[in-house]
Amino acid sequence: MSMTRKFLRPPGAISEEEFLRKCIKCGKCVEACEKYGSGCLELLSIFKGLRYWRTPTFNPFKAPCEILGKCSVRQYCIEACPTGALVKRHSYKLGKVIWNPNKCIKVRGGECLVCIEVCPMNAIRFANKVLQVRDSICRGCGKCVHACPGRALTLIPC
Ligand code: SF4
Ligand code: SF4
Ligand code: SF4
Picture 1 (cartoon, rainbow, N blue to C red):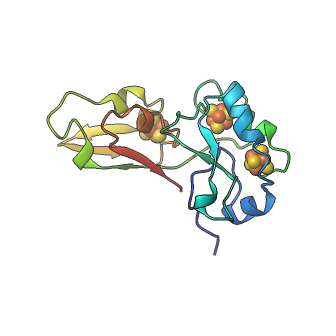
Picture 2 (picture 1 turned 180 degrees about the vertical axis):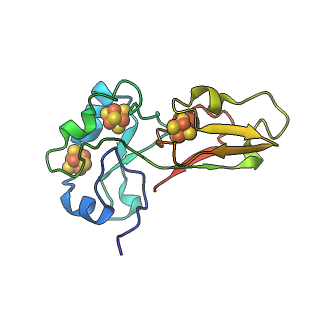
């Protein structure tokens, strides 16, 4: 059985087990993302465990990934990776969106739905006080997570 991901990874990350074998923790993907992308990547701290230390993670609270925007043609993080830990694919899925109704401003009677406005895939619906993210359409770009003023959305590895 393949190892489950504990952390969100940059676009094109190979299976977690292989990724941990191939990633040399050089930080080149993070540098490329800062220079040409959105700056959504960072290196994990030593507090996440020695095995994961300095491996790259996608942090949608820092910035959303531009995989559906300016990085849709060229993925600078993948191009910068010298080892094949990140590989080009036809399409990318960075994570699965989880919704917390207790934090959702709309559910609490406020005027919101920013998540629906920012989603480039039109993957979010709100009906009967329930937010639905269509997982088959969502690419896990994190735009909704980043934009949510209530911090009601998070991304988990998938
Ligand atoms: S696709 Fe672009 S924005 Fe997304 S992680 Fe790579 S360089 Fe950063
Ligand atoms: S560029 Fe590749 S090898 Fe270097 S830290 Fe990023 S994923 Fe790992
Ligand atoms: S639901 Fe969120 S993470 Fe998924 S594609 Fe839309 S904005 Fe991106």
